[in-house]
Image (cartoon, rainbow, N blue to C red; front, side, top):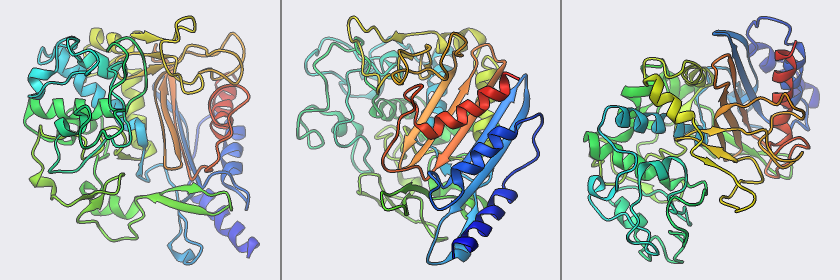
Length: 434
């Protein structure tokens, strides 16, 4: 049985490995080792590296579908396999907000209460407006609490109401002054999605698709029901490896049956058909913070946007403002929650690394003075780990997606990345240094 599994997996590795330029053999070996054997730490891996405008490495390995009871269902992960990419979903939403600011439709420092149609206020600081800049930099003082997304007919106003039905413990708002402290908060993007809907009269995902995804050549969607038939057949569940060594599907395990409705990530049924969603009432329904289904090839296009200085989507001045530091961690004042050192600097809807702190406690990519500064976004949910990261000067960057990662995380000795991510990054940097 072990030999049979090994033969199947070898086939997966072979089918999912395209030709690459240059000498990247160690990185290919790393990806193969991550998904090979009975003790493989991940179920699938995909990596794309772009340098000087050229794709210099592109490989996928492992399985998109795992089914020990019905091996005939199993198929390889490829560079074109769509998966739910978690918080990488935030990048296109943030880009739309920058576009609207560049067009003069939105003032990043204005009170959001008027365009939202209700008073968005921290009850501890009712005279302090909440702004789009605060949402983009995760300094709004909003908190995810137990629930940060709801289906219709609930409204965003109900979700953020202090002490309301969805804030039974009073944890929705922090006591800090808005704008003063960084805490990564998914709900910031639910507010921004609702704002996009209020400003356009359309569902946020339709706006993001028309303004960002399709112009970049991405086939990504924010709701699984919007995948075309071919994409739906290729959609991969996101697995998490359990402590007993088995993989458990956490999201998108539809087994070929298209969902007419779907449970939200909080278990509440989203029964309202998409055409019946009222734009501007509640932008959290389709998970702007983490609901995008995209392939590694899709994310390569997002990477190329970051390397282009804004390209055709965003004026250079506004792109530069997006990458400029708007919040940086200060150890003397403790002005933010850094997630073990991984999150130390934020632009407008985008993270930039700062060379980290000490080994094992920072946002570094490697030890030593030549640690690169990169800007982009991580994704981490359900067992998926991923990132889209680019050199701010546009010279190079990479995408990686790791699926089926272990339930118990192991941190790298170099940084606050997991050991599995660090192996991939080590392979990329070693090849780039040649």
